[in-house]
Length: 187
Image: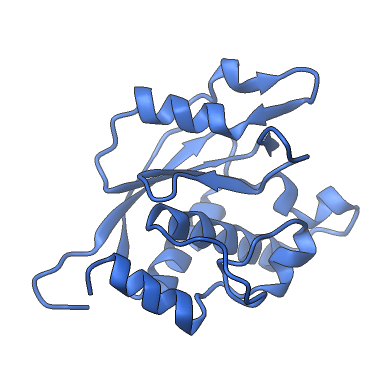
């Protein structure tokens, strides 16, 4: 990191039922993946998920509505806010999303709902679950920094259309995306 430039602070915002183990894994994963460009500043919440974001026909929450709520109603103390929730998320046009972010912007959200192996009928696997949480958190925060999806399937910025896509990628940026990240951050 360049002398005199402070890392951007990230606030983890709990929205619903999210365990401490998720927050600890995500916090450590963010700091590791971003190499000092982002630093965890605090964890807040729980904050209620806005009722208006629930779509009864789908049985899911519209993540764009949640981001709109955060943008207009939540006053963060950090440079970036990553909301973490347990509810199932979607955006119009897609069956579900693991997360969504402003690109670039200040707010992002991930859901742990579809990251649990049990969701797919597999036995619980805490290490796999936490690894997925970290990948999705780093991915969405990458978007807040201005990064787009990457064609390298191993890069954390690769689009995840399924849980298998998430499992295939790593929790780190490819060389090209990390170089872009450094440029976007002013290094």
